[in-house]
Image (cartoon, rainbow, N blue to C red; front, side):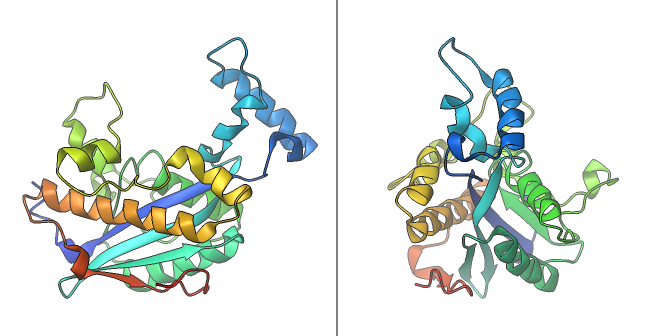
Length: 244
């Protein structure tokens, strides 16, 4: 499986997003009205309100911002992991785009993420447009035929055509005997860690674990031994926010 893809031609990704404003009360009037309309489509219980549902705003590109992108790629037998993180979304997206345009722009390169086709890839593209940034070639897929798009989704691959359910990265990691990426926080806690605890470094480490797990899961799909901890290299974030 996936034998036709060169491992060093894949950029593995994971992103972390949070609601663009700390709380429902902080929403500007125009966005508050729009969120109330969105929340009406999300209600599943009588007691749910636009305010109680605001915790879900982070998964919608129109109401969220990206605070971290962790990218990983194989080089010379090592998995190199680099994170782009910060409070300034435009600045971190600019730095990420520079890397993609410099090293991963050719048509034989792939992007890979878990649930990437429904979340990571489109959210990155949408937030770049919102911030007035040109899309890197690998994200600019408008008008492309499905077989022309070099996006790999490890969750989609696991479905084998079955679309009944969502299979989490944590579940597949456990199933394949990989270290869990959820040993500290999980996705539902990211917003509070960011807006209340102001602990971005903790979120970056969590994001990096997810990215490494995606890379290891991809190797398992190929029937290969996953990269060992000793062969993982964390490359310092050029913003200086996180460097290990």
